[in-house]
Amino acid sequence: MPGESVSFRLTILGKSPSWQDRDGACSGYLVEAGGLRLLIDCGNGVFAKLRRYAAYERIDAVLVSHLHADHLLDLVPFAYALTYGPPLRTDRPALHAPPGARLALRRLCGAWGSETLIEDAFELREYDPDRGLELDGVRIRFQSVPHYVTSYALALTVGGEDRRLIFGADCGPNDELVEFARGAALLLIESTLLEAEPDEPAGHLTAGQAGAIGRRADVGRLVLTHFSDQLDPTQLRGQAETAFGRMVELAGEGEIYEI
Image (cartoon, rainbow, N blue to C red; front, side, top):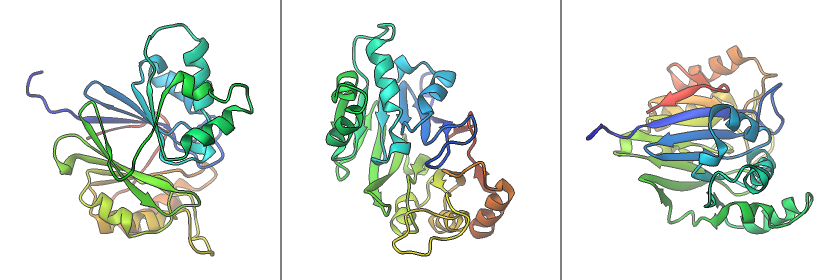
């Protein structure tokens, strides 16, 4: 309708850590805003889940937060589908990936065959995290967060700053994400651990640490992700809510969040 404000629709495709839940998938999130269909991360198992909830040939762009396999491995079957599946589109979807992605993806694809499999199927662009992106009216900013490799939290905005969706990517405890997410409508944040890592620097969060970041950032909603189905969800939620001070939600396949 004319004058109707554009909203985000976030669908959870996969929320597992580096090993998949039973019948689950690793990191993968479908974001729809206006006419844009954006896939954030494409870890192992995600492509099959994407096909359950959306037509893969209608994805406009894929955005990768960092170069770990559980966030990008299913770019391989996605690329095969675009290459050998029914020719339902003449253009290539954009693939926005961190600096160094071209070399990393060539090494990955070389194990299957052509090193340029993904480059040939997608329009690969290594993003500049200092400049951000704009995709069909959705503004995207990046924030480096501590992990075992360079990892970028993502801020997606349509309309005002109070309508921001923040994806915290994989990270350990840090102040940068607090400032980056301050006042956001929704923070999707990892919660891999039951107990804090003994060694520094830490590369993952506990539920309590995730809740503390959400409280300090004063976000509207806090959604935990990147945790195994082998963990007790009641315990995770309890730890997070104690630190957050309010209700916390746990990501699950097919769950939909709207902003």
